Image (cartoon, rainbow over all chains, first blue to last red):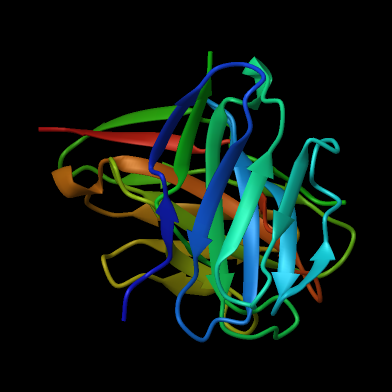
Length: 116
Length: 113
């Protein structure tokens, strides 16, 4: 089946605008994760869903960032009032089940966000 | 909290030469270890992982990594690289029972013809 898909692949926006990034996980995958990767860095955890429940949002940098997964499938990461420091690659991953850390997270291609 | 160090940001190597990409981690509890690879214009793909058992794990394309608990390392090796191995490689750790992956900064492997 298809892998994790993300849209848009590239987003250029002006400072102060809101953006919504979409993630469509692998069909049947229970868990969904968002990571952010700044230039020259590795991905950093933002938030995690188990079905539709947001289990951990400790990695969200501030209250301008929010995420939802209302039907336990597609997820949207929203950034309000974007700032230049929000420019990064935003990565989504999904996994089949929770097995205490052993499950593989499958990553999408990412959305590269540039805030001017 | 755990952390991952990839000391080499860029590694150039000639085709058919051996390569080692270094990864060290710090954690006070049991962890699972992963290597992900990102080919140009593609997403992150799992290359190999260590969960338990044999400390030497292999990938289908000839890479291997060895978990060394005493040195807290999980170095990635390949005896003979190909042009197609040119990519960025990320080492990651996950605490047992957790779901967060903690990544290193990545190592860009450039294979020179």
